[in-house]
Image (cartoon, rainbow, N blue to C red; front, top):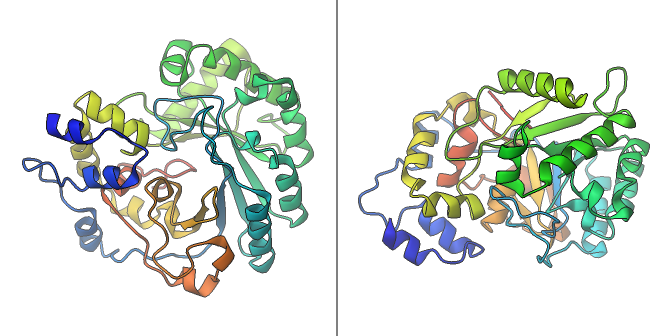
Length: 349
């Protein structure tokens, strides 16, 4: 493992990440190739089942630096989607009405200066919009304080990360003071109707494990969250999504530094679930990078694994070409197929 760490110095270098995941430097660690598991399940090559979700990364700029962040986002990241690329996304949505859901991610997508304009233009196309809000952005600056009202005005589904319902575990994972600000932001969202019974304003939370282990059962964890947040903070929400940490970017760095990489990968392989593999999000989702390039999923985007077809950029979007591609896979895909499975919408099996 020391030699592995010595060769892995810059996690933003996607080729180095892939090299580690394929074990080119580890002679003693024999990990079953993910392709072999798919073949045994009758799922190789992995193909799309349809296209419904249009996931757009609006940039890597963020007001937080979370330990588990697979985007490697932070305040000093400069990558940001331009209005030109947004216009190309809007044109694609106009031409492909079956892309019913637009999922806006980052970084903190709200930090893109064209964020609100983009949301308004998407809603004019009658699409369901999801915003991946980190909660603390609402309190980060006065210009963001009215985000709950903006979300409500456009009936946006809000999906927010809350690693746990206690301060110590949340702050260890996301930074000092994050839990307190997250609670305040959730209360602000509740005040305008989000997550409240009798409204159509959807507020979902996301749980990520704080270490090298799989998430607990999603339903039981959701019950714990709802009871704890209501009892102590009078906070209500709709659903909890339990998402497995994938071994890329900062989490891969953590695994290597703590000498947990091999154990974690073995754990993922042993928990491989063919039902989860059949329902992975890359089969009905297209991920658009901040620069307009196209990927099978948000995780492949961070590894710079572009679509395996001629349509590799939003300017070249061709639905027939994209629907008939083979989905690119790698050892990191074990993260989405372990146990009950994992996607941007939580468990899949």
